[in-house]
Image (cartoon, rainbow, N blue to C red; front, side, top):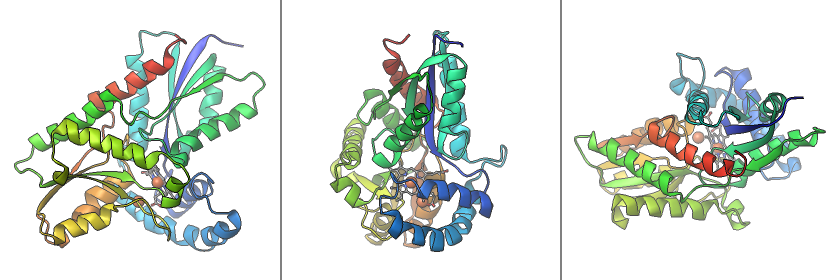
Length: 330
Ligand SMILES: C=CC1=C(C)c2cc3[nH]c(cc4nc(cc5[nH]c(cc1n2)c(C)c5CCC(=O)O)C(CCC(=O)O)=C4C)c(C)c3C=C
Ligand SMILES: [Fe+2]
Ligand SMILES: [Fe+2]
């Protein structure tokens, strides 16, 4: 049995294997049966999920994925960026010869159990598990951790596992976001009247039960606004990607974009600080749908500021967090 190495496992949300009905259904089924994501009792939720959602949503969302699919590699960008981040991280950690870097997805492939097992087989008896979410939510961070520990449940000789906490107020992260905004805006021949920092939402009830997500998003937003030197009336934190009938965190991004246009605001910029990589929710919902809705209501200029992805600044953030969590192990 090999031993003595340290693994670093980068984990993002997941992605369907293809945009066809069967792949989309498989992906959404795994996602939407996760009790950390949908907290309703299965008695209430499953008839709706299996009766309606999984019969209609795969087609609808499959079409949306088609518009943002990475055709060169026949995969979603979330997968492309996560793999790139893993390769670049391995390069950056070359000075630590005992460290192995790998990546996984919470839903779809490569799965967390398969990569934890692979790292263990390679001799990693210590693993740093990094859920790629700057703000903590049970629906994202906790479910990644749960999945990893489920695999450990099956192992006789478990690796030691260190879970990486959120980094919503980390200086390097705020600095990277700020430069991504400044560089993007400097390349335009116009300047926005309003900058929206749009985070993925969660149901309000999750927040009321103690999820720190809302407050972490607010703090990220405030620190970014201060770093950009923007007054409060030129910067807003909003929440996107509502799903289902419940009330979610407010203000909603789509409604805000509509209202801004109706109120006569002509130029806006939107960024997604909570997403480590661009994905359906940023490329389709914001860069396509929100832009369309803004223009349709009289808005003139709309720009989407890309996520940090596999950029130099983005990698500096991830590397800083990983090196901090490796302390004592390398
Ligand atoms: C109740 C449902 C959902 C909760 C809660 C939720 C929280 C949440 N999600 C992300 C990040 C991503 N979500 C993505 C897609 C997506 N999210 C939901 C539902 C909930 N998310 C669904 C059903 C989907 C699939 C698309 C759709 O059917 O609309 C993605 C994109 C994945 C991709 O491949 O591009 C990301 C990323 C966060 C950060 C979060 C809570 C903080
Ligand atoms: Fe989501
Ligand atoms: Fe969405």
